[in-house]
Length: 249
Ligand SMILES: NC(=O)c1ccc[n+]([C@@H]2O[C@H](COP(=O)([O-])OP(=O)(O)OC[C@H]3O[C@@H](n4cnc5c(N)ncnc54)[C@H](OP(=O)(O)O)[C@@H]3O)[C@@H](O)[C@H]2O)c1
Image (cartoon, rainbow, N blue to C red; front, side, top):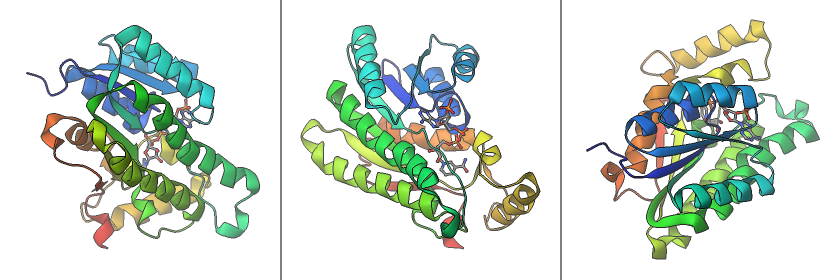
């Protein structure tokens, strides 16, 4: 039997990178999957690439109405959900003196508020003994250059997750934090640094990972599968670093 046979999974930011790889793996493992994101073309492409009847819903995680619409669509299509992955996120690397109001608000409206109100809307339509995964980042616990605003937004989301692990205990919904280290996805092209700076930055990152390379999105997806599936059924309230050991250095 496949690991997620009969389960319904919702993955935000599912049209790219880690979210898309996770949606593909979960669908391959038998889940009925809903993915969300803003860019319609990339969403349609992901639906076609993933196959398995995956459903794409366009929207912005910073918009509370979007989360309510996703919850309503899941109820009308499947009745309920089993797995929710609050994965959508953005990063804009800047030294703190260059962080504008807009940059700060973008991090916190998507990476933090988007997670909070996503779980607020989706948890009520989840089955008991479900699994919520909050995608944070190694940057939430390890100081990395120019990550301050991003790190704060991800640390807050991780704090939400630990509180939810207790808040949802009566319903036996497990809530865990997935914290990737540097992972080779589209986000590396959206870091807010110049193309000239990107090469040395990524080389520096790879050199600080014991494996000597960045993770692939599929490797992070495998960790999400562990947390979402029966393999992780007694794992609750943890932060799982998927960083090739980078946290040690
Ligand atoms: N790659 C890394 O090195 C790394 C390391 C640590 C943590 N993470 C975290 O892992 C998660 C996935 O990142 P990734 O590397 O897979 O990056 P990615 O390929 O850029 O994917 C980000 C996803 O989030 C979606 N998204 C962004 N803003 C959104 C919004 N306001 N509303 C709805 N969806 C939104 C994007 O779709 P649209 O643009 O179409 O909306 C996209 O699907 C993020 O939370 C990121 O912070 C990544």
